[in-house]
Length: 382
Image (cartoon, rainbow, N blue to C red; front, side, top):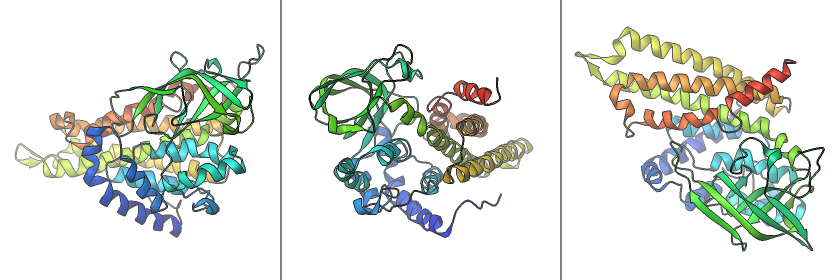
């Protein structure tokens, strides 16, 4: 179906992103999968091209564009080429908004040039062992000591934690027995600070090109100048970006489901069974037709949500609806496409296998499908 979401500027950016992905990502992607990460110099190359700094103000070397649609284009082009861009999506769409919204002038001057250039990589450390989605139950603490905070605790499932130069740590700075959500603060822990260590690099079923780490903080002395925003106000900050975070997952889900269909069409047109192309079988045609219809429905819903988000009007409940629908659709479509590959679909040398394993986490991170249903139900007054 025809889309009217993008302008000429977005399409020009698409050409830049497509050229970069095809020339500088695709040829090296198998090596990165084996190594478990994208090399730092590739982030720096993205910085040189202006891809990482699109939303960073011009005075710090960025493009000064607050339009989320540039992020959508980048995701779509990576999915089109059957690759991912390591932790770039997390850095641009989940973490960078915290810096953009809450960094003061001194922090902007200190960090923004490196963020735009790709020389500073980031992570955000929220999840703790045993807490899962219960952010109010966080046990990592930050105690004021003169001009510093002393941070103690542990975090897990931290995307990009092994490579990050700056880690936004959510820690408890005070306790209110009547309000579990009060008393959380964002502190930026920098690589090399004493007591900050990276533990295991966790081995995942999918998403092989982005590292996921356990982080430990033992008496880490973090300057008060590294507090993002106001002390004790982090819970509200975390909720502020949730709509975009969930929208981001949905964007990836739709783009990757579309790529799964393209891969299945290509495979079935060239693969023969009983002396005829698999694509000629009625079952193949029906399956791909059904999958295409699901993707187009999800795309229409998603594009509407993106437009609302650009206008600042996307509600939390609608973001939950979009994430729920698009991620569940992705799982159905990729599974049906893999089936058309037969036994080859189970082999990791075929991209459909990677699309399948990568897809599973979409219904978990940024809030599980069950959490999305709770949010939606509340919006219905239930």
